[in-house]
Length: 176
Image (cartoon, rainbow, N blue to C red; front, side, top):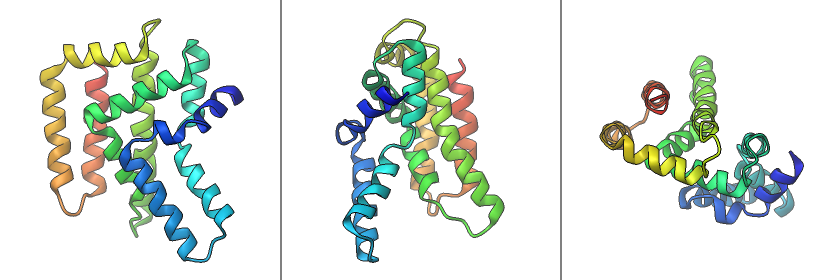
């Protein structure tokens, strides 16, 4: 997996969406402001930036797909459905209840896994083409799902239960 992970590591600035880049920059600033050295802060931020890289590199290797193209399709699918927002929100949550902490950690992984499973179904098609065609074929369902995500985004605060519902609906939608 090293070649795929290395390619992704060299492109994180281009592959992360604006929200991901902003979160990484905030994390870097916060770590530095708390006394972390520049090197340590950068290493931690890079770990955040690389979240999911192993799964993407593995799928790219197994499907004989370019990891950069696969990652772009992964990001496009996340943007299309709002799963990028849901995953980022789950990642940032830190509930005081230990069961809710386990739930949001699992949801963050699930928002990645559901996209990887969907992209695994491309079966020889370019990943971006797979996402685009699926989105066109399921436009009504995509709009309904996005409405659900938009309602969650407008809620204050977003709760683990909301994200769990989004994850469940996403799995159902992407299984079509």
